Amino acid sequence: MALMDFIKKQFIDIIEWTEDGDGVLAWRFPMEDREIQNGGSLTVRESQMAVFVNEGKVADVFGPGRYTLTTATLPVLTYLQNWDKLFKSPFKSDVYFFSTRQQIDQRWGTTQPVTIRDKDFGAVRLRAFGNYAYRIADPRLFYTEISGTREQYTVAELDGQLRGLMLQHISDAVGASGTPFLDLAANQVEFAKALNEATAPAFAKLGLKLEMVTMQNVSLPEELQKILDQKIGMGMIGDTAKFMQYQTAQSIPALAAGAGGGEGGGGIVGSAVGLGAGVALGQTFANQLSQGLNAAAPGAPAAAAGAAAAGVRPDEVMATLERLADFKAKGILTQEEFDAKKAELLKKLA
Image (cartoon, rainbow, N blue to C red; front, side, top):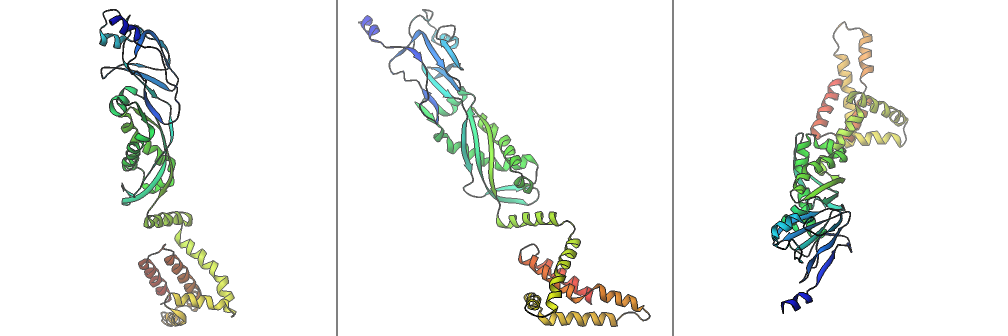
């Protein structure tokens, strides 16, 4: 009877895995009631690794190559089995294949704004998304921590966990880099590099290697975007005083054209009305200028008074106020900054 059972047994001569589709990370070779024939063949292709598991314990790990299964090629498994026949009889063991090629174009992104700490702004809330790529680097660790005894384990099943690790370490990436967030936002390559370095150790604990992280977009809250726009604008402007002089000079041709009458003259008055001054403000400028000249110290040279009158003209002040009002409307200046500049200009006419 025992002889008949032995004859009926099916033995496995060739163990291999040809990946039929994408997305499978771990696959268990179908053993069923079969046993591995002594001297059988194990083929592990490039981008694969094979793991032999005996009674729930990882015994041997094989990299790419073709192996003849004997006591020489299965030393750990042979020791665990303690065969008294020097491994001349068939044996049974679970064999798992692991794909070690890169799993590319994996997506990560924030579903809700993430709050991070920044040395310039304190707390910053941002949205970001990009891609990453990883591979199985330690199949023994991946088996014990993730895939286990399942028939197969796929990329899709691991996606949520890895995506969470990426998002969890965004704040760590910004903090470890020591770079102000505005500079990171302007250099997405450095941001992605910092995120890779911060997240890689968490991947390694699962038997994975994080190969690459890319950053496709960083979206800032509206109020922080305005600050960034102002910083960029001020960097382009350089000297604010020179910029105001330039803007005033640009306004002189329009003032000259408006002085000739027609439709062009109404634009300046309309802008003044928008500032809450109107035609009366222009009259006030003229009166204040006249009072300032009349109040000149006795004995002051007439040329100096004439130079003062020529140096501060009401139409120039009007043009400057118009430009400041435009800055305030665009959010470059606050109401308080605008009021301060306005008061400073009026003092020059007093």
